[in-house]
Length: 90
Image (cartoon, rainbow, N blue to C red; front, side, top):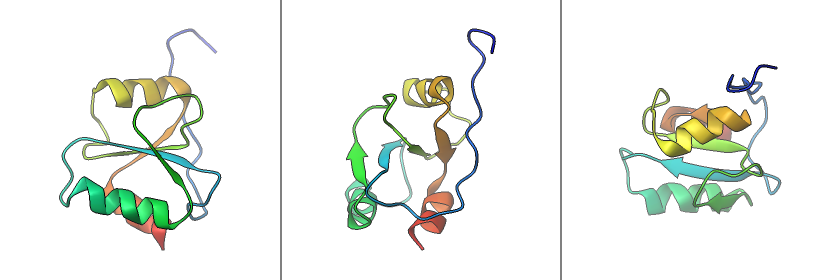
């Protein structure tokens, strides 16, 4: 793969679980603390920054050019919006 070309993560067909590390970015439609509590209720960890261990980035804008979104694309981390997160929560 060419240097600088983002890998595309395969879409999830499962729910969040304890193996996931989820990071949130951007201004969401509801308080971040509430979304973080929902993520944590699945057993998943809530991360503060995107690392190679991150499995999902929840972004207010999936097309964001923020540092977290750019790093997620670089690492091949799936990016979803709030609706996508709700789908993974069940």
